[in-house]
Length: 116
Image (cartoon, rainbow, N blue to C red; front, side):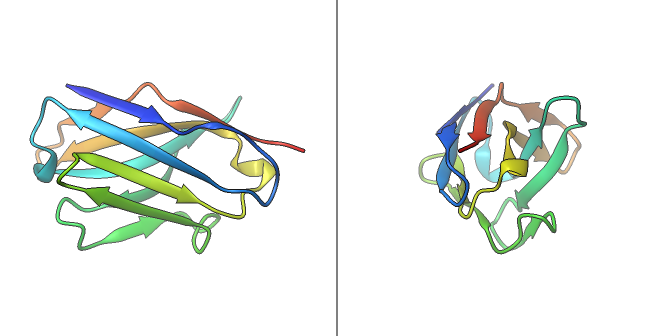
C-alpha cells in the first residue's frame, strides 16, 4: 500500500497550490479519502474529506470556500486545490485513505509553506 503526496512548496500569501496524492496497493473506490495537516507544535487536523463515491465532501471551517477536494478513480488519486492561501495554512499536509471497516492508510506528507 502506498499513498504518495506531491505538490507542496513555498507560496506567497494569496497564492495557490494543488496537492495530489497517488494511491496504490488497495481498492481505491472502497476508501474515503481525506487531507490532514499538522503545523509545528500543533496536533494533526482534518482539512477536507471526500466519500468513496464522491457523493459527499467536508471541509474544516477555516478552509471552506478556499480549498476544494476531488478524486479521480481512473487515476487512483485525490487532489486538494488550495486558493487564497494564508500564513496559517503552513503545515505538512497528509493524505489518508479510510475504509468503512476502519482500516486506514497514511502518506508521508508534503510541506506547504505560506510566507512572503
